[in-house]
Image (cartoon, rainbow, N blue to C red; front, side):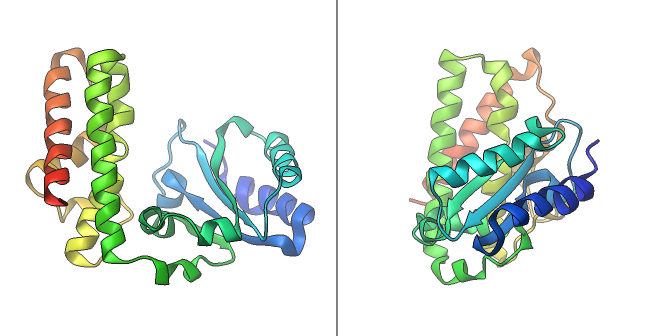
Length: 219
């Protein structure tokens, strides 16, 4: 298992600040490391925001990432500040809540995040998931793709529960206490990541019917 504190807080942050200095607007972490749910297979999802971003900056940042131990685990979001502030509003809810600040703050995004944007985000993500699941079942490696298809369901459930309760639950255990019925089944599939040929039809039926219901709810 990667020593996260050493990797990001001592080595990566030091290299970033030495290279970019006062131009760094924000650095954060997302995903399973942010939630304390990382495994040996987990990527390290970094958010890196500069005052402005050019190709030279990308080249410098790429060199930093490639110099790191376990560089193959690094991924994430990179942007200039102006681009982030002008980002499509329906993406900002999840981005804000799933990012733990390591340097700087994303609070300037809060005025842009409205309930209408969150509802639109749910609708768009559900539609994309519905299409992806149907396409995968028909034309791709249906069994191999199930894990990737169930992964974004967690983020949809977070947004759905937030719209109902006004609370954002970043851990699956906490989120599960607010779920019943098909929502609870979807989260359980997301958590166990256990898919087999014998349950293929049922797993796709569950996911497609759930995505369809979300599309109808947000109509």
